[in-house]
Image 1 (cartoon, rainbow, N blue to C red):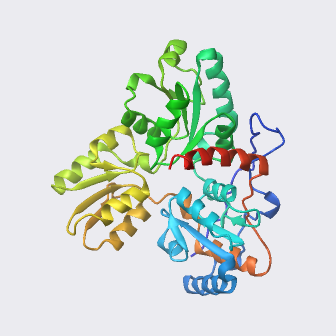
Image 2 (image 1 turned 180 degrees about the vertical axis):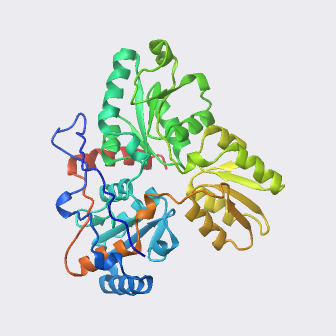
Length: 394
């Protein structure tokens, strides 16, 4: 299977606010190679499998491969660990004897792994074009502008605590660290929001408005106390000062394109077609979808609920299709299907192809580290501060 290589991650850099303006949270481009050699791109599945297996064996304990839940099965089978982004970053940090962490996920995940890993460890993203459209919906320049406008409008009464979703760049995590904020995951967001309101009067939540809205509603915040901030059109609402003064949570206008595909109509159809069906959805779905479901939670929560369910139970699941198919395969005593029958795999996750894995592993055998993700020390420090605040809530 040929691998397309025309996509590349933008080389745009964003200055980290309130820190040394020369510091960057970005790829170390001197160690990045975008174009996979044609030799690997044209290689067949059996040959790739043989080469990956041989390289893993040769590298031994010096290597750990991480596979996110949304990766295709052809990648997951090589993973030493699989999980959500934060679980994988934690697991990598515990493998102190591993010199190389190959992260089969997307760039913000590899950044987090680098932040949490030891100084001797090198984090590698097999395909540097594997980004995340939602994470890219909030960049540091826009967040800094938002922060300044909010404080100009609200003055000394602002009391804003920044909260960033794990699905964000390292420099946004660092922004939260500098400004008394915190990181959250889809599983601990309610606990994080509770902590934030004990520190201040308002929350600025980015980049996913839907996780923020669903969490805020669960916390008891009224709809008229939630404000959506559009970075492309700041303050684009009537009576801005009054609206912001009344706000409890300011939601960044970002979303996950995969989870936006799920609808209430799909839930209603599933209930009609399969009476008694259990509907479980990810909190990145729109609020009306979450409200219409029986259960909602992180990928780990979805897996856990279906695994412990009784044999013969039926489940309609609203999350990425690769994970849903894997859950169905691993729970053959239950009926599990994706709520959207035509949903596509996460396109950026799909950029991690076995050819890229074979390529970076064989380069390691030759002593070459390519496509390393390296976060500068200052950014990593402040990102770690925000992450540690989250860990302290456990």
